[in-house]
Length: 425
Length: 171
Image (cartoon, rainbow over all chains, first blue to last red; front, side):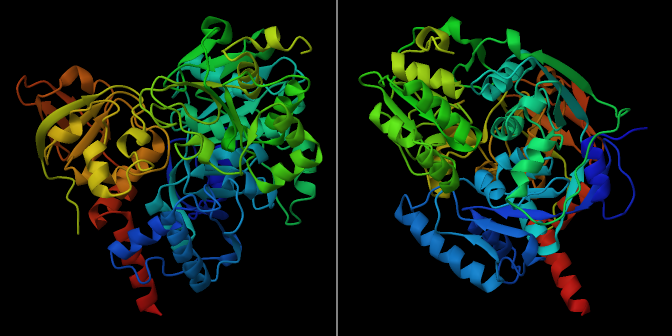
């Protein structure tokens, strides 16, 4: 019987050396471990049980990446103090790949720096670690306790997931649609349609889909409860990696007779622009059904939508236009590299001329850290989540949308079908 | 400290709906101390919960319990929750709760067995959860040995310590 991508990757990493299939439990060898700004919380778990130094060692310095991301420069005294502790521990442990003086989001910086390669098994102490499936890596979020185990032994327990095949049909328009796709899927099939599963995104649309869009979809695998979210390796992946890593890698594809727990098809040509209404990712609506709702704040950023293509579409649409009076349109690139690319392309200048705010790369716009909203306010956001309170007040209304839909709302001052505002698309 | 999965748990049930997120359990970005987190946990869904929950109480939730971030449910343990049963659980939340360790059982149909405020008895060895008032019961799943070992060790950090000390002592 054929194997899915997840079965192949986990078989390849099974410490017992035997092939595994969906449902099996195994101890797996880890290729890459990412830790972010909450590193000390992992260490404290060790300290609490009397493990020497909290984290006694890093099993393999070539495979550990410590990115003190989320909130740089330090947003509060507590972060500054914690960062000092992290630096001290990084030195003690001899951390080789250490980024502590650079704003950004780990899930963009990991690919930016070439720390993730196809076919690898990569884990991190953040739910959106699943993002690297865009590059054909088996990547997923782990708990802090699991990371303590990984950092010490280079191993983690897994249950081999069942797989869900998502077949994407239709054409890539001249604007990003990844967010609309995943909101649509969550709306049609539920916000846990892939509970514990491995998603394989495939179909005729995928070869046309830029890496940035693939990263958006893979990142959002966790919003539909998946363990992994894979794209196959292709020419776009090879080109993306060419300038970023010189280490060898071995891509993984599913066998033709692999078994899938479910197969879902979506034709993007007939898909309306999507919104998730308050306060759940699966609370889907076509944009026309919520059109007219006045917005106070619009956001673009995070590990789902802070990439070049997200910022490019905002800048392109704002050319010759202005953000509506009274609307706070806040944009946060996902890394310094992305920020620089946007700067060189003239996008940042356009955004500012049109009245948008551009804030430092990081996770703040996707949490109640940067750009709070008040009770009764409405925020439309191309970020990861719209849980109640995610942007501050429990009594604010949070809508999710793609970067084009968010930009249209920022220009109109209300939720609107982008085609009504931007006749050129 | 070892954890005995086979110890029978009997407690008052708090029900929660589908898709309760870890931000609601653990609103860490608003409250930085455990005392503050304990005073506000789950209030986005049930404002009375942090005020009225008692040690030994049991959470019975809908599907996709613990969706969202990788943050653990340490605060639920700290307010005294003895076990969680749900229609389905987010995989990271499931891992986190096993690692603590706190009993967590994915039991489709549990909300047909017990209502809010009733008393539930959980007997892992017998593989049943029973509504003490109505006598209605439902099967609960057994963990594979690899997971039982995490509970028996007293949680994943303790397991790491035991293994690390054993490995380094051999040298």
